[in-house]
Structure formats: structure tokens, C-alpha cells
Image 1: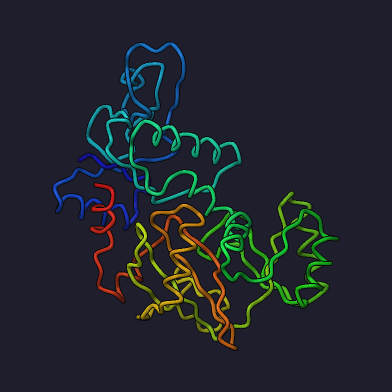
Image 2: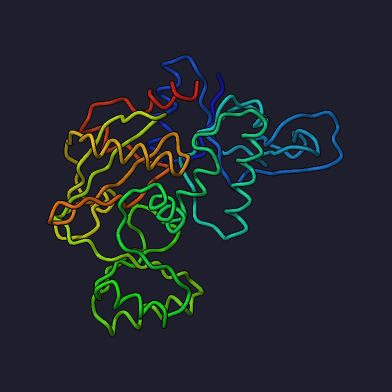
Length: 315
């Protein structure tokens, strides 16, 4: 089978998927969002959504998607994305609203053409949106921290007080703890909210959960729990391993497994990392669903060959 991976050129995850694919007898090529070219109309019989090419002359016709030049993932002069059996999303790079919407459109067209996309564009679109994810988790009956989302600093200040004057401010879009800050001082809160308002940002405020310095990451694939990891941070309320937190082995409880599976189902994600946080009284909250989950630290503490499991899932 021919499998495409949307990932960065220096990505450890791309290399791991290529290694696992080769061991299983499949070809895995790297793709880039920035190289995708889409076209509609004037069908000339050529089929394909997207092509990775080295020259414009090898585009698959007016109708389809193509990649304007080689991004290092294949030696072929041309590759129509509809020739792929599956596409695995390993990156969702920052971009303008137009760029993000366009990428989702491309993935949706690929999926509609019969290419397996992991995860589906609808689930990725949901998971990258913190407000939508939180709302869907609550609708599914899962415990989430008290959260207020608004667009102006006055409403944010009211929310700040109602959330006990200690909040975590998060960007609606973002991962790995980037752009997240804790605010517990009223003056700092006012300056923070007004700055974000001037930047036309949405203000996402979540009551700070006083926790013992760790959270739980549960990895889910196709309705089953692959395993869990405790992420421990020394001195930072953010426990992300990418922010120098450390991973430790963790046996997933029945409740954590149930929450993780329900959270993945709520967002529609086949493959997901679900973050669960406990306060100091032992109350648990589902914090996030990551539809492009990392597994490097998870693999170290569990010994699981996650890349192989993922390749098997799409083949």
C-alpha cells in the first residue's frame, strides 16, 4: 500500500512511520500542506486529489489536487494524492483562517474520494478548537473545568471573578502548552484581556485546577485504549512533555479508560491522546483531546511500537 504522511521534514514521527511501513511491506511518503494545489472544472479525464510533483507540467489536469514540487517524501516526478491508500496527519502547522479552512477542505475531498484519512478532517477540526472540544465533552457528560469563552475584556473580567480569580488563559487553537498562561492577579488579568482583545483574539478562560503537578495522557485508537502515561512537571502548571515535563508509566483505571473512549467518540477521532487532570481532592477532569497525538514519550514508558500500530490501523 502507498501511505502519505503530512509531516515536517525533520519529524521523528515521519521517520518512525516510514520505518514501520517498510517493515510491514508498505511505502510511506512524506507530504506537506504548503505544496498542495487544488483545481476544479474542465475535467479532462484525469483523476486525483492532489499531486506531489517536480514540475507544473506533471499536474494531474485541471480537476484535482496536486503538490507543486517535491517535498522530499518521494522520488516520483508526480504523485496524485488519490493514488494513496491512506493519509496520516502528523502536523497541523499554524496559518491564517483561510489556510486552515483550505487544508480542512482538501482533507475532506481526499476522504470523499475514498482515501483513508487519520484522523478525519471533521475530528481534527473539532479537536484543534478548544471551545468546541470542551462543549462536546460536556455534552457527552464528561467532567470538564468551569470555562468561559468571550470576545471582549469586560466580559472576561466578569468571568475572571466568577472563576474564583484564578484562571488559565488558552488560545482557541494551539498545542503542546504554547500560548497558555495562568492569571491570578486582577491588574494582570485586565492587561492580559485587553491585549488579547486588541489582537482580535477569542478569550478562552478556564478555572485553574489546583493539581499535584501531573496529569494523565491516555492514548486511544479505534475504540480501544493503547495505554497511559503520567506526565509530571516540576514547578510548571503545564505538564506537557514538550515543555520539559517527564513521562512515567501509568496503569489506566477503568474510569480513565471510559472517559478517554467517550472523549474520542465525542470528537469523532479514531486516534487520539486524551488528557485527564486530577485536583488535590482527587476530582478528575477531561482537559483536552489531541487528534494529532505525539507518542514519543509514551513509547519510552510503555515499550509499544506505536508507529507500527498506526500503520496497521490504516491498512
